[in-house]
Image 1: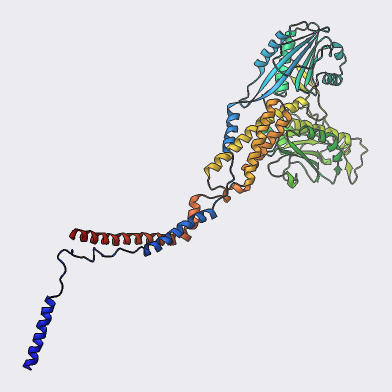
Image 2 (image 1 turned 180 degrees about the vertical axis):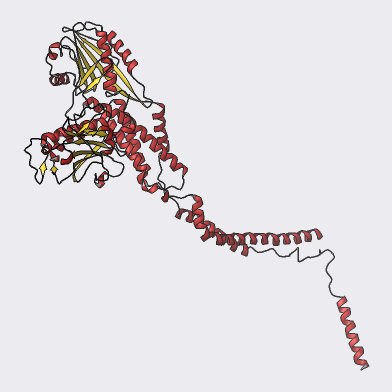
Length: 604
């Protein structure tokens, strides 16, 4: 046992000796701290995989943005601003060419021209939006020769010397004189001519075309005639016989789309007494069609008609023993139209922004027939009708059956006599003229005297149509510029608004029509300028009120973020946080490796 113990002790001592002889860490190797150091460089695999997921999300963001992108057709904002600036800074000028002819006067034409221009400058009122650039030429016809004033305008008068004499005005046939002057002054240029003739009975007449004539006595002074000519040119040919310089825009009976619907209604108050019908087609062909054709450059007019029954008025009349009639006072006119019983419906085509004017023929019942309208001065209305601004007009027609000593026998259905129907529609045309701002009477009472105005078969004379075209062009161009400017500001303030190609085309065509209207107006082509300006205004309104740019069709960026963030924000946040965490871990491990490497280099 002692031998085994000794042997074991000797073995352990040998192991200790061998252990003491094991290789030791060199003194030059630094101390290694596994918490702050590492000997191997950190790998990039985890970092690459994490950032690959993040980049996949980032690459998908443009596709997401494209999928929710709002389509916006490019609009010509610069051209819209240019049009608005042009109309705001420079007044729209309409060229007007006047020609004054003096027959039988021995005067100097240049002096007459200066005198007339001086009076025109006193009478002409400046419109802040549109003005007139007028020129004047004066001709003095002395039988054997003619004296002409220096004409600075390229539009010289086409008058041939000796074409008009005092004998042409001897007869008091204004229609014949009007035709005679039309053949003399009629030409390709739209020139407003005034013939002042000495000798004969004094009278002043404005024709149906673009001319007028003034017949004065032998002892009349030419200066007085010059003042009267200047007043005619300004107050009639420029202003249309109104005291104001232009028709107020709010009383222009034309819709925003340039359309007017004339709805004619025959109202039978009580069909138990009598029922009347009318031959509307004949009246439409003979009276309305020429007027609609004449007003075509200003407005697109359509006509509708209907016959209604059981349509009593909303107020009562009283019996006048002296007149042996029922009388309705004008102070009760606001209660005449019975909106509850008068179902003045129109077709579907009359909807939208079209202007609807109602014209009604009221046939009273036997209980209040004959029915007369009394004016504020106590007199009975000659037309037996009245006008309602921006609504239309009403004419009361008393059938023959309500008159005393009448042999009229009511039948199942009666027809209004054609002559009575023509008279009523002439009243309607006069009311329609009043809605446009013209007077219903054919006389202009000026400061220097009265002028008789010849009526036209078309309802409007040529010089009246020129006045309407100029005023309509001015109003439409400024309305177009205002509407397009509002659309431009609206579109630029809402980046997420839908702008369809149709809107872009409407704006483009509106600008083209406005430029064409400006060009035609500057050239004196009034009809074309009115038609183009109406088209420009209508297209601008269509673009502004397009259904696709209503409030339900666009939304802000905040709304888009609020809608899509619940789907993508939770996942996106986890991916971003994981990428940041992995980047931070990599930096820490790389810092450990760099620390150990720096300590190892320092020890060596």
